[in-house]
Amino acid sequence: MARADVVLDCSDNFATRHAINRACVRHRKPLVSGAAIRFDGQAAVFDLRRPDSACYHCLFPEGEDLEEVRCAVMGVFAPIVGIIGATQAAEALKLIIGCGKTLDGRLLLLDGLAMEWRSVALGRDPGCTVCAASA
Ligand SMILES: [Zn+2]
Image 1 (cartoon, rainbow, N blue to C red):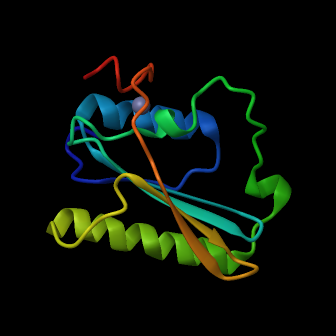
Image 2: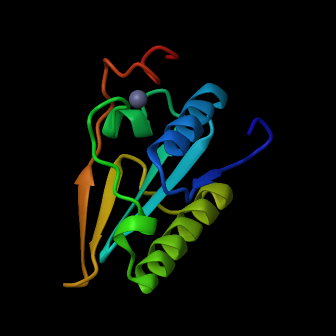
């Protein structure tokens, strides 16, 4: 992790996502997060090189009783995985090249049934037990 330029999280469970996030916060690495379930997808960038960037835990706090819905149980419409994966690849390349405007500070949501994208702003949680403690 310490030698990585960019980290992509393509895992399918909260324990791994939070472990990757904690390592990215510790090493101040940009994290490109992606998820897909059924016909829905989401992508986000947490550019943890910036001191005011939100982290994954700010958005999805660990320990909350979020029901874990896994692809293995719920299924996933395969093209959604490709769309989200390609979006993550584009964001990773932009971070490495240093061009354009990344998804940092935004959560991109895909409704695959309507084929509509939505973007919501992400703020840092000042009480976040992962990134606020390391600032
Ligand atoms: Zn945080």
